[in-house]
Image (cartoon, rainbow, N blue to C red; front, side, top):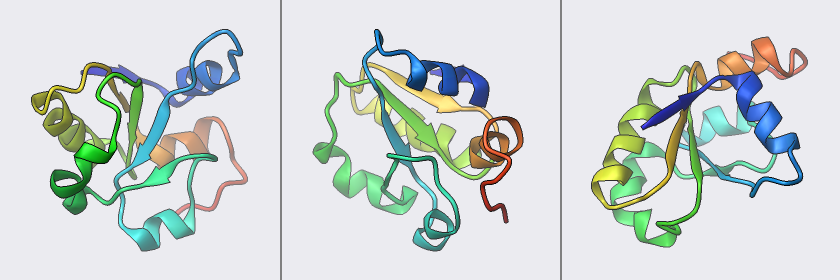
Length: 107
């Protein structure tokens, strides 16, 4: 699984010549409500085994959580299920708030 920093994700999202990835946030609903990266979708980690068929196996997917550990585990599961392009956001939304969007609420 590829890893990328918050600033690398910011650059990817700003690149009009590059296909936009699905931003898959695996945190709990209360965490997602507290703070999130714009246009990310919520699919709590516990629900991924039952809901992974809703996702496009060939789309670039960036996994997101609070610090990067849960998203890494969920990304490994998706890779085992045959997903072709999984990337983990190193440091999660905490890194995004620190390095990209200091106005983002943190917890």
